[in-house]
Image (cartoon, rainbow, N blue to C red; front, side):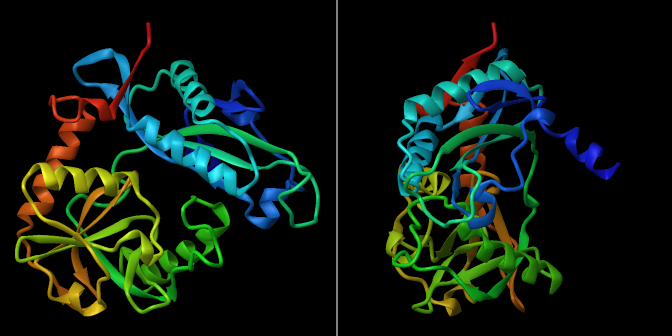
Length: 310
């Protein structure tokens, strides 16, 4: 019964085996290779009905999301073009005609049935499903714990892709944080520097400057992260990409997390250090990004992909 209630939040139609089918019928075998070895890669993007025009759906930076998933597929030895992904997502939205904000999860994976861990001589496939989604984290702010788990290194796992197997570390860190009384986890890398949260990038603000770990700190190249950096530059704010020490988090003026699901989420507390209640830069960036995604401004119109429903 709880499963049926949860399924009510899923969009009714999925893209599966190159056709559109009811979500409940888009099933894989328990012997599917990717289920056993984490040999999959996924994307995630937000969409919503256009508040200015109910006859179209808005997707945020669809092209970048499709490019990143195509790039992730390459690590699985799967040649899947960004154009094919974008076409499938566009039709997926038209089939579902969502009436509220939603999240799209496209997924590529090794679809053969077998037990040998490999990427060669094995079938791959691609599916898409969606779910209604409001705020993933509280917009009022979250508390964070420094995780005892370390972010993986790129020399052992391709961190330029969203590889599904990598998210065991995120899962361990998130559960550790929640079960010890926090909302979210912050992971350090193997060099002892701040890397990212369980599924979000992190920004630190001190004396009007914005700092964020660069790509050589084993972070995911976040699309929302890239958007925030561009918006900050537009506002005349200085963004410095450099390694960040743990102690800097505790004395920051503002800290926020960014991601497709999290959007821009302020951090209220890290461990036993409470951050200042006023977060003017975080709020300005959040408000600007929201206005863009809701098609309420001419700023960065190229980031919005409109799908007509007629």
